[in-house]
Image (tube, rainbow, N blue to C red; front, side, top):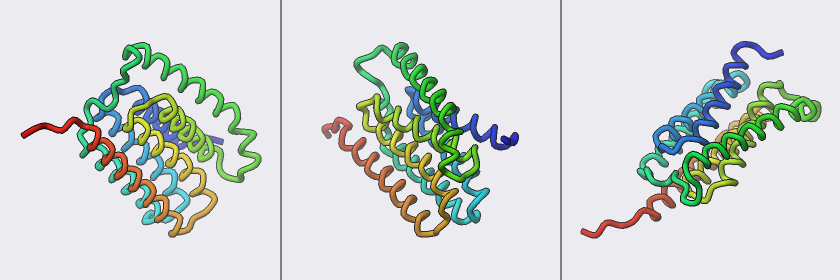
Length: 194
């Protein structure tokens, strides 16, 4: 049975993923990433000690800081679609993925012995991450999709295993994705001649 807190976390995770998917402003996109990692922290803090759960929050926010330091205001604009048609397509795709995940989660829950809302949020984040990096060629969207996919995996796997080594490895992967993404964004920007 879902509690009110679980329902709020589900809605916040979906809202953060949709904000990252639909926004063309890099500031709103990074804000969506921060909200997403806050939701992951609140979920994992219910199972793990606060210190281990805080690793996910700090690593996710640092990855967001690394991506925002690349100052990529033009990295989210798609060139082959008009902005309105691209948003409509992304919204319908996200709705389809969310409906499919909501439909298959009860049968997946028979295989994975974890609480339902952990599995639902984890699968939603994985699906939205795959959609994010699957339909875009922009490096920032691809990195954000990979971070979303990884955070969904973290939600599911943290409820199965609670080791400190796992938390450190996943935090290192998150930071590496943020560093690689910011490096790619910085090398793609046109160099100004002095």
